[in-house]
Length: 155
Image 1 (tube, rainbow, N blue to C red):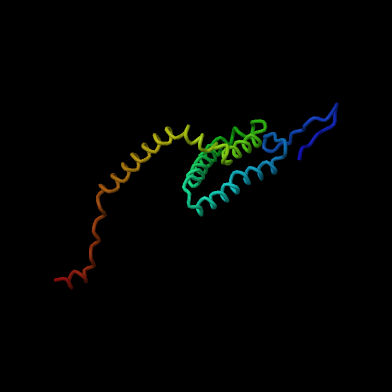
Image 2: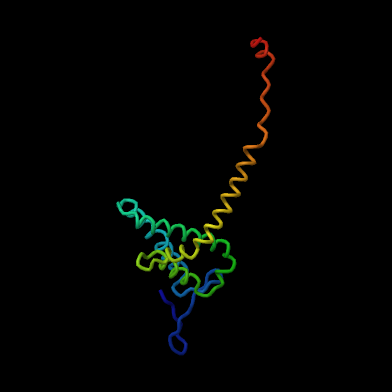
């Protein structure tokens, strides 16, 4: 995977895609990130759902929450992050750290982010309640008027 150019000794040549330098190539890094970030956790989540223990369920639910938050954050920072040298490799290492059960990375991130998420949850619930209240107190639509033929039947 590593490409080197031979001028005054072997040095590592970085490949570029969209302004992002990568050591092992954009496609290889992206494939590994998808494998460790989604396929492996999907399989472990499947096993956790089938098992009678609940600890592994919690671990993988937390992983998916943290991974989702990371994905949303990355979506909004997509203008900046491709220009960070070796970003794809750093992302791969971060995703592996999040996913591996013995590193407990996702649980550590979750514990750090939990107070902020709970505050946002409270604001979200309040806003949702306000919208529901406004919707419920809005005047009901006017009753449809019966056609004249139906009015005469009722008399």
